[in-house]
Length: 171
Length: 185
Image 1 (tube, rainbow over the protein chains, first blue to last red):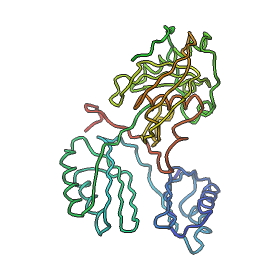
Image 2 (image 1 turned 60 degrees about the vertical axis):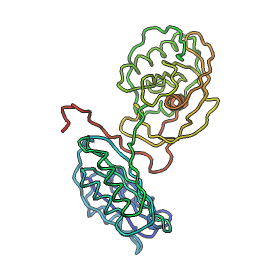
Image 3 (image 1 turned 90 degrees about the horizontal axis):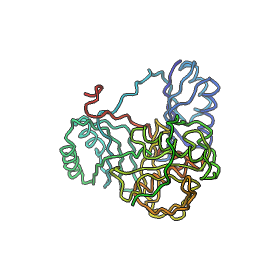
Image 4 (image 1 turned 90 degrees about the vertical axis):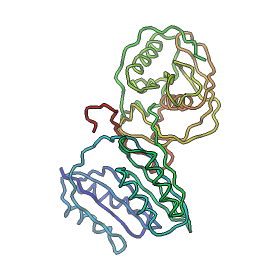
């Protein structure tokens, strides 16, 4: 059994997912986790699939998709262990006037504190920049200090930043 | 104020069904709340809910029975405002719902995922008590309202996965280690 990481990026049109999924299914590859969205109008999909086919065979099967307007990459990846989170999950939201380095500066603050971003999306809408990040934060970290540091850097960048605990209700 | 429930028989702890299982997607039948099998089912739901750590509600389809019966008990939960203590209802329906709020929820029948779901924070529910069949009206809010909506959904074959707010609103459930956990740092 091999696990393959596949990315498909390029000009959007109807049928890309259908064609990609058909090609994978034809190779006996089971499409496991995937994420697809439009990023500034560009089709962008990342997925992990598993089965007996090798990367070269799957890449060949996906070739018809490329057709001049899509880039496809296929590479084998090892199985990743499902490690428990040592702490809590927070949602960091940022919005403000776009400028260079918002993600770089804030993600560095989070990384320096030992936080791990597990989900990220950013959107640029006219002059407005929006960032949403889910961050696992070990319980050994001083949350207040991290919040203060994020507030300081956000103030320097001229953006608004909030960080709040994400809670799950188990029903 | 706590709901006054008829005294139910001793319940048995049943296995909880997990998705994908067809019973979780089947709309449960209305059942006779006075029938001994329904009364026993209700008692079993309570017994099963009580032994599951952190479980605040359980519906009949979650123990493999496509019937409209469930129990909820949110007493002591930090997000609870109004609480009726242990609630056990048969053939329940929501008659009023307002003030939607988005929240992330998980379910014993979908143990590895969570999802963002909009739920009313103020609701009125009518249903019948097991054994007596008495019709009751429960008006509640906040966490008890969310739990009741989640369980009533189960009775109609609806999972939180059917109600997530958008295509990116389902997440792997994170397994948090508690302080003092031997696997912890």
